[in-house]
Length: 180
Image (tube, rainbow, N blue to C red; front, side, top):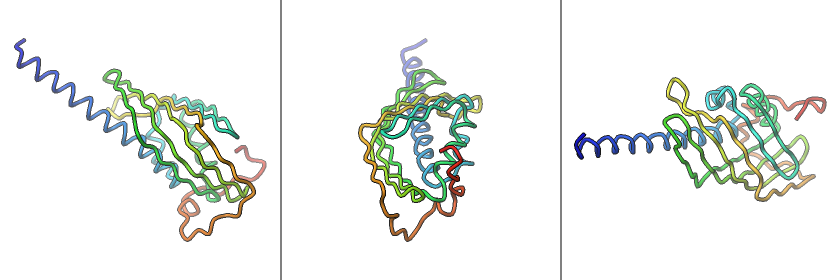
């Protein structure tokens, strides 16, 4: 193989890596959008069927296995009695192979639970793993975070909302007997 052919082959690989990084960024950005808008149907495609989740906050810990369990937990917790804002930024994405990648994302979030008169504000570092499926789409196969800080204010009065998208798009809030 000539030097030029080798250089072109390497350029092709490098371009694919950049395309994969951009596709992974889009997956995570879409994840935050879907959570905050209660768009659970669209969120399903973002997760590998065998996704594993472990989130550690100051007042909670989620350990979930499989897409169905994770999506159902999201739908129950991001409901019509909540307001959420998740900003994921400063991604550090590493493509490990043609079908595997990892990423670290800095999270800043605000979560109002109007049913329980509570507001959580905090930051965390997501540590994710991604896998490209047979159709060539990147999906989250593992997602973990541990809070850098978390502030829980309770009881608080609900904010004076002039717009409340999850109020329209989220499921009704679960009753006290439902698992949160």
